[in-house]
Length: 494
Image (tube, rainbow, N blue to C red; front, top):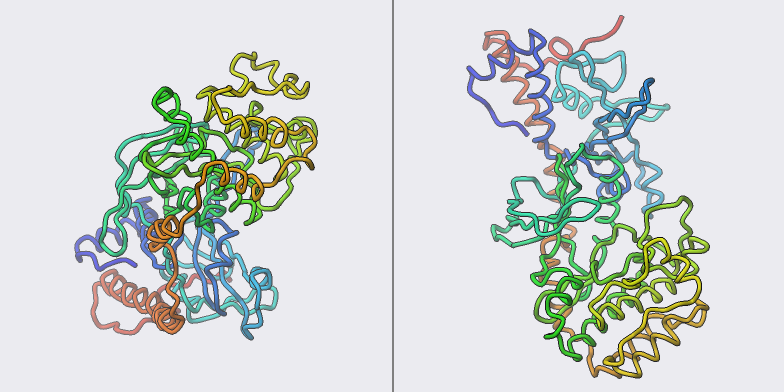
C-alpha cells in the first residue's frame, strides 16, 4: 500500500493527473504494485491454492498476444481480480473451489478505472475501496471483495533478490547467481532462472517457465533440485532455486574425466535413480533426462533439474511437433510421440552412458541420421570399464526395445543399491527440509485465521486514509473530513 508522500509531491501529482499526463497513470499503477493483494504474473492455475474463503481476492496480471490486422503480434496486458464466491463455504475440494472463482477484468482506459461501463473511477485505489464496501453483480451473482490475500511464502519481491552474474544459458534464457534476502533476515546464495530478455519477453515462454515452477513447487527429495520461490510482480520473472556449486553434471564429467572414480560414477547413477523413483511415484514424467539437466553439489549429491518439458501423469502423447532432444529419446517417442515412465527409463540408460563415457550420445553420428540410427536399433556402445553387471542390465533391460520389458525405477534402484552398497539416508531428507523451511506454511490454523482477518481490514483502511488525504489536498481545504465516494470518485454514465 502507498505511504504518505510530501504535500508538495502530492500536489504536483494532482496537477499532472488533472492535465491528463501519463505520469499520473504510472503513479496509479505503482499504487497497485504496492498493494498487499497484488500478485503480478501469478498464473490462473495457482489462484485456487491461495483463495480459501468466501470473499478472498487477489489481483494478478494476464498477458496475451493479439495478432493485428497487418499480422503483427501485439502484447495485451490486463489486471485481473480473482475472487472466491462461496457464501455457504460448500467447496471441499480444489476442483469445486476452482469452479467458484470469478475472474474479473479491470479496465483502464481514458484515464479511468472500471469493472463496468456505468461506473468509472479516477484511480485504482478508488475502485478497490468502492468494491470492498459495495458488491459487484455479475450474472445475478453478488461479488464483494472482502479479504485481500497477501503474497504467499514462495512469492518474493524483486527487492528480495540481488542478481549478480550469469552462470548458465539455454534456449529458454539464463540462470544467474543471486542472493535471496529471506523474510527472517538471513541471506542465502541461490540460482535465479529467468526467461531471456532479448527481442522482448514471450508470454508463451513465461507461461512455460511458470508451469515448470508449479511442478517443482511440490517436490521434496535429496536428488531433486529444491524450489525456493518465484518473483512474479514484474519483469524480469525469476524462479529461485537451490544453488548447486558443482554445476551441470555433463560439464563436471568432461572437466574431471580422468579424476572421477568408478565409485563416484556409480553414486551419480544411483542418485539420479533415487530422484526418478520419487518423480514417478509422484506421477511426473521428466521427458528430458540428461547429464546437462542434472546438477552436482561438488561433494555428495547429484540432483535432477530442468522440468521445462515435464508433464504430470504417467503417459503423455505429444499433439504437435516440438523441438525435442532426439539423441536421448526412446524409439516409441520418435515413432509415435508417446512418452511414458518407460521412456524415462530408456533415457536414464542414455544418462548412464554419459556418466561412464563423458561424451554426448551418438556423438559420432551426423544429426540428420540420429533418428534413423535409433529406430534401426543401434545402441550407444557402453565402455568395458564400467561394472559388467550394470553394462548388461542397461543393454538388455533398460534399453529393451519393448517398453513393457523395461524395469521401473523401483527395480532399478534395488539393482543399483545392491551393486553400490548405497542407501538413501534420513540425513539426506533432513538437508532438504532445511531448504524447505522458507516455503512451507505454518501448521497453526488459529494463527493463520487471525492474520487473515487482519488482512481483511487493512487494505480498505489504508485506501480510505490515502484517498482522504489526497482529496483534501486537491481541494485545498481541510473542512471536508468525510470520505464521500459519491461526490469525489464515481463517474456514472447517463
